[in-house]
Length: 384
Figure 1: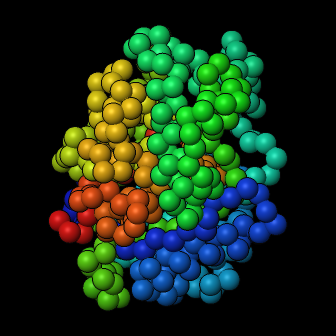
Figure 2: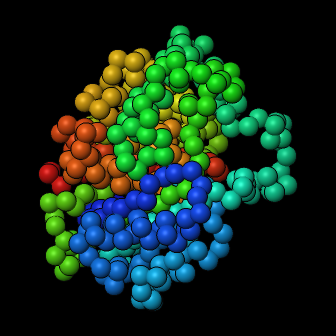
């Protein structure tokens, strides 16, 4: 195990900003991204020349997106790079920004996520020249519908209990001004329009456009720039892993989540039951159940019953996806992971308004990307 740089040089989220996630519009990606960055700079109380390095998480824009966008804030000559890691692109941009600051390379770093749909999702693995048995015939929603069917059969769970994830997350999203879906739904509405097995349209995330930005700083940067320490959320852990070899029948994404979460908890010196708020990769409703269990929040087969009981509601033992999650907040790919960090930061500051988890002290973000890769961050409230 390598050095824990985050323990050696404390690293903080000091600024957050978003452009609402939405259906595709004529808004340029430059407008989307700059809206988020300007909001994050204002939130931190700093200016663009104070930023020393920048990472842009994006999966859909193509090459060369960063400088033409960020130069609109001023051509400061700082190092910048695009980060592509499928659905975990934004999370990986945050991880790179944290590494820059924790290593002492910089004192202030930007992690930006921005994307716009361009007609389909270009997937390099399909061009790898490596065949598989299903040959791409099982589309994502059918894959997760099959996982949901397996979960229900194994644990005595009903389709309505799985759909309870979407019911909760649409309720949270209705309170979030940055969410793509801002409408509370009934169970009848959630269950309507099945597209594969019991998996319905409202149990699948929308993929639109948007942007989110996170500014990371060191103690030295905070002091030098006069940033408000009472709103600086510490990054206790940043863990990234890719899949290994697993026994036949093991769910790869869940197994990878177990490993990545354990690495993050080891870094942070805390455990899953210490968490107060969680943003999880819930592109499909069944994923929240699988990942909350893999993250160690409950035993296998228990998550559906905990959702039903209100355990994961706002005001419950641990608020899961208070933003609305991918199901309601939306999943514009590049911004998703940075947006999760922004939401947990807001929660740990106590600034989430009517979707605030009371007394939130520790929070976790989790994203999985095609590959498979997984990124987990653990954050701590400035209130100590």
